[in-house]
Amino acid sequence: MKILLAVAVVSLFAAGCATTDEPTRLAQAECKVAPITTESATGVRSRNPSSIEQRHAEMQLATSQYRMQNLRTQGMVFNNVEDALRDCR
Image 1 (cartoon, rainbow, N blue to C red):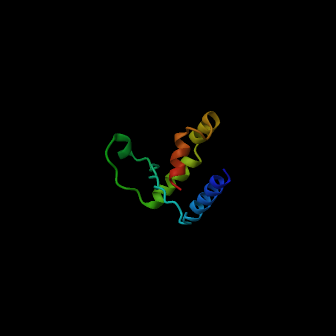
Image 2: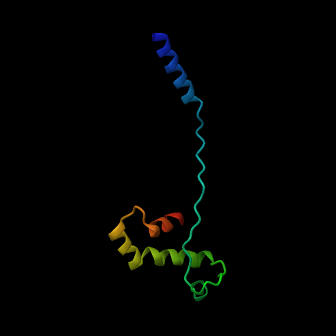
Image 3: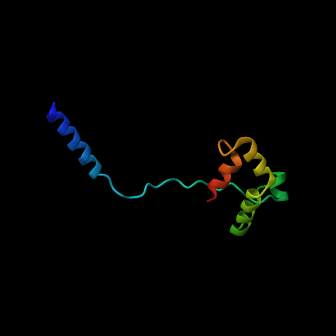
């Protein structure tokens, strides 16, 4: 019995030493916050916004009354606005 316990401890120790310290790569989410234009409201495919326009749209959404209402009613869980803003970081 002691031998089995010793073998189990040694095998766990060896398995722990075999791990690498490389950071785990995760897929980067695509930021879906985009500036509202008349073209996008009508369904016409709009051009790709510049990074400045993209960041401005994120800032507007982050400080909007709509976001604050969602935070009060739904909190951070299952909140699409918070998920969209989190994906942009």
